[in-house]
Image (tube, rainbow, N blue to C red):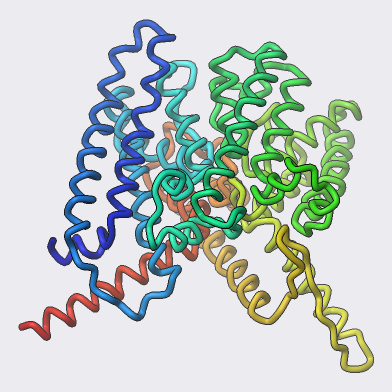
Length: 497
């Protein structure tokens, strides 16, 4: 194996991930028997799937015979970031191939749809009314798998020495069971049970089976791809809207919280700071948005409450479904949505954004700082918060990590917003809304994202989606790791010469 190969394929993990992604891309073929006439699209999925699986097997064989050199400079996160980044970028490429072959999309548009799917963003540039069912399923299934994460799926079946590093690097902070394999299996079981529940209740209230499957996968993954141009609003059904709200909230809740709730430990769950903060946001933001709709749009109180509840939930869970056009909302209500795009869902869930726990900690840090400044004497306190596992103190390390991440998040947001204004003929406010939606993997658009959008603006939005899904630092650490490895290889090459 050459030096470049060692940078990427430093273990068989990459080969396993390539095999897994190849298998996932082939899954949409199962819908073909239900929709006669779509057999011609099987080739679009079979070709990339077979190539990926064969390549993964070859990589596993080659890397199993390769002795990995020891690099003492790597941290556990650095060890995990490279395979995770490689897996996601490979998935982006492979997921785009069916659109290239079957839908005749150009590369930028096909890659955009793939990135939006795997990152669970939901921004789209295609007309769903003209898209075959197999591709509609492919879009929803990408989101379902992207919400779970590739490392969870591969850990259910095989486990290696570096899998815990990969698990942490993909953004999963909690180990629910004694072993990583059981943790992954537990998360998958929870996810699958809610999938069956969502499909069943959607069908009971009048949604077709195919639409029910696609919308449940997208709602649970807090993604937002739909089979209808009017999204959930197409059905004009209050029960369907309520079911969607429940599924979105489930998808944006930490898997560890869902586990203890499923075991009936409601009192323990009620102590979790992140869950309390989520409920608090709903209590504050829904009435504010409803008041704005009643005041500025003349909407009835009942209609404004359901529209506000749906809009607030779909935004902070970073799903992006809609029952009305949010571009027609009053400016005050739109600003509420932008704030919630930044906040996002729970850590360890399928949602994007800064995450509820970081937003909660930021508020707690600010309050403690104000208290210290107002105190007449030197004040000593040990603020704490509750996780599922235990009560944790808010120490200096946690404060630095939280502030550092939030500062980096907003630096990327402002940079992306400015780049979007350069690549798109739009106002600064429109650019802020659209990039916040992409970066938070929300998927609500004010019209900037379309098939006619410039290639530059689509690239900016794709970068935002990727950084948002992989939580910024993973991408930066991965790039840093590649640079360090290249330097190390160059040094070794010079010594050999």
